[in-house]
Length: 83
Ligand SMILES: [Zn+2]
Image (cartoon, rainbow, N blue to C red; front, side, top):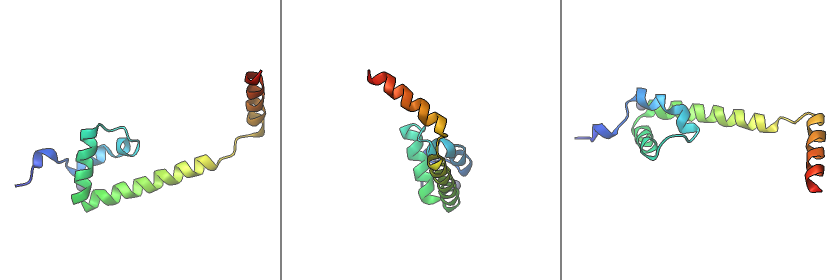
């Protein structure tokens, strides 16, 4: 018999999706989520999709250029701290 007590249901796994992606789960929760993903195709797909989406969003954000005035202010702050 499977050690069902150590497994999350789909609902419990999905509820931890965001925390999982943000790496905010405890070691035990992480282990349970990963164990569930190994046996559940549905959740693996859902997690994969969210992960891709999140990765894409972060990539876009990191590509955003700061406005010139922000660079000027940053340069000023750096110049001030260099003295
Ligand atoms: Zn599942």
